[in-house]
Image 1 (cartoon, rainbow, N blue to C red):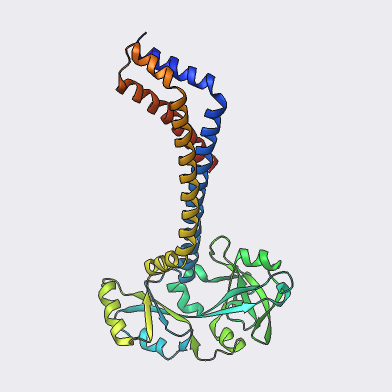
Image 2: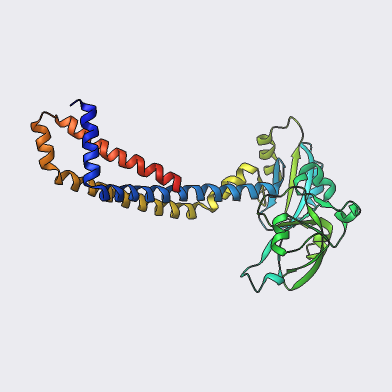
Length: 325
């Protein structure tokens, strides 16, 4: 019998003799790989969603100026507008508003409201602009108008023209849904309104949360960032989209490490079970292996045969695990 036929004959014989054991081994590998791969996909998707949401809040700006505190005085805005390296600047006020109508069904029903200067946002962060009705173009400047992302509309169960009630502390404000947003990330619950109206309604007169900057063409971003950072001092932070991505990774690191450890435990447990079953199978077949040695098989041939049997089980279980994951 040639080596290929002998190998095939031994594989079929082992499979037919211990079919249940082989099936259990494949299932153990499949479940371990599926759990590990699924957790990897969950981690990747979670970080991607978080990063995309962070980038969409910043629009398409080159740099973002924030304060160490949650808000800062808006007098910084004209100073940055006059800076020689800045082409455009867009002030933004971020407000976390509550939704009293959702208080009974949810523990913490809040969503983000962004106050924007429409004329500046057009050049810096156009993705965050509201889209009013064709016959009510001035709603973009109305004091009671708010523009909702599709996810926010669905969450609040409202449509264009409806009214919503939001809260900031003990204060309740009624706003009119004037339309949707030009572009919003899927699943992101945000609202946009005129920055002056937002400052007035939410008692934040003269305050900003951040300023989005568009630099002049040809300006070295790194050098400009270093220079502006020295000018502003330690009270302000300058960030880019890459910094937001890194911050998103850091914020979810503990969560991802815990899930990865769980996946490794499953993989190690599965590996231990498979190793134990293969060792027991080898010990049980000592008489068969001795007979094969007597018939002329070398030690290396027997070792390759055992590794081939284990490898086939591992590859089959891994492929099924990836598909399941």
